[in-house]
Image 1 (cartoon, rainbow, N blue to C red):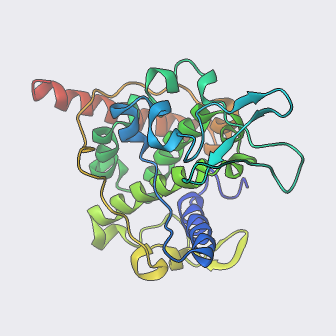
Image 2 (image 1 turned 180 degrees about the vertical axis):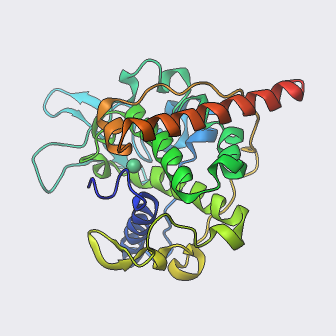
Length: 281
Ligand SMILES: [Cu+2]
């Protein structure tokens, strides 16, 4: 796992992983597609726990319900009124989600924190300081880690997060942001990468980075823009809370790199706020 996180493979690996998941779903029902969970908009427009994603007919509640027999176990819906408790084939534990346990997270209506508001995410796409693949990938990986942590339970740990189906919705959104970054300067960024594009995607031993850089033509999918009513709204950016050590040390290979990336985030935060102030907001 650690050859994926904190390396250039983070974005390409997860792109292939979520597409593979979607293909498995489509083998059962060809009309199914993997939705993205746009936590940047969700955090502004709705109390996340009352949103569609976290309903009993969809991906279950923010905090798994306590059952006296099973403990805190996540129940998800099938859209027709039935719910299922998710268990793991690998162990006897049920899947856990404990988003509500972080009082600064879900219940204040901020999933990834104000740093992830739509205008701030857009600024990651357009900022000259994130023009290199490596810097962009590190910033997005850091931000994405906060969403994992705020979801709590299995989502908050590296080795268990894919047990929660929310993982795939979350990573579809991360992948969409990368796609936006790529298409912002297609000529230079479509095939931009920080290492050799003939590198393999670790567990997917025959799949190269090169084969996933153009998702539209190579993997046959694209993203629809957010539905109307969910247009981006400009919000002041705030300083990111520090990630727990588990995530911090996984993403950054050295204190110098952590300093570089966190100060890049801080300077973008500053310029987003300067722009807002200049525009009278
Ligand atoms: Cu992740």
